[in-house]
Image (tube, rainbow, N blue to C red):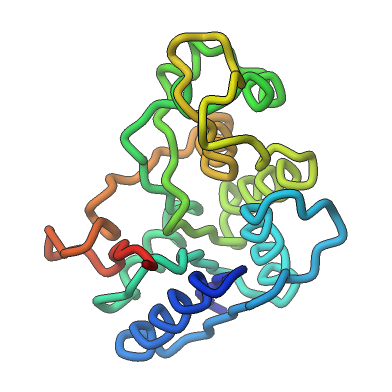
Length: 217
């Protein structure tokens, strides 16, 4: 079963979720699993980004085989069929943010994944506002397992400000689940997709974009 998932924790995100739901209704007839509170999760809830892993775990437990996470900042502007097919073909759909992981990963998460900052400088950072996994593909299964475990182990915590999380001058800010996703893709030899092809910023800039980030303010 194909499913879109989203968690909205807070009034602003709830408004975004409503807008996302309206846009989905125009272009998509599949399952949309959404929460306005935490999905079932027996581990620490120290950062809202962990809710992405909790939602993924719920979808897997309920026999969803192709799972697409969309942020509350997203709107859907076209048929999602090709995006779902990309996920099923590759196992993981993960756009690149344009940064590298030396810039977006604090010391703690690099140590957790046994990656040096020199190595991280060569690894494209991920953009997890729109990403997907297939549980019928070995890379999708492996990504989900590592992503959920990283959340349980506290790797989604950390500040989006510098806050002294590394003394290396290449480090700029930590990106929580996004930082973890970038490093996991590297471990699993998952090629990141071009940002702007299936998803991109509003307004639409390419004919293949079906998801756009419009903000929630």
